Length: 114
Length: 110
Image 1 (cartoon, rainbow over the protein chains, first blue to last red):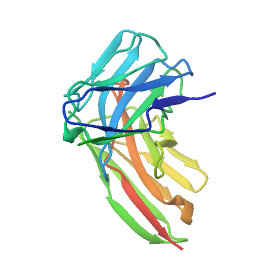
Image 2: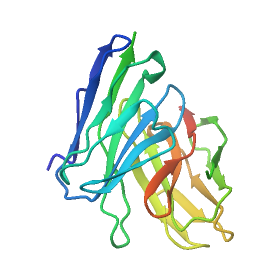
Image 3: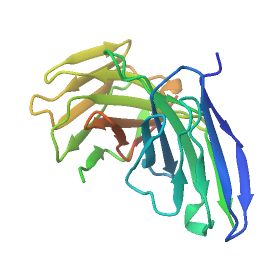
């Protein structure tokens, strides 16, 4: 049982390059989230999805795009990387029905834009 | 949008001491969640609260959902070195998106 899997774990991008951060979960969770965590700070919500085909903006969506074509996968796309996007990115999933609202997090992707 | 204010920002305590941290919000919520994050890892759920006034324990951890539904606290009793980490409060806004406080960084000196 893998839980939430993020790839890659580390990446260095040059300004203006693009990349996709992958997130997959095998728990059949409907809700998935992308967060960024800057050094010494909390987690800021970038985008979330409540099911396949449905995505919504969070607090800090600018510079990012997402898609949710399947329940399992929720990739995050950076089109034109900027130094301000240097951060650790976490993906999470929840199965919100019933009393258990625990979010399961991936181990994070550490991105540096130079 | 709503804001989660978490305090204190950091704590340096001696092993064996008790710890208390809290979160307040500008909005009323239905759920309060407390997470712990260790270095290089994603957050892990400690306690979830679903009703105003609810008091829930998980070992040495106790958390309460404030009566006004705008605040929550987390207490850790008899701290040990492995309690070190960042503690986050979180809430599920509109039961959909989930937002986090800025975190309380706990250091425990042996």
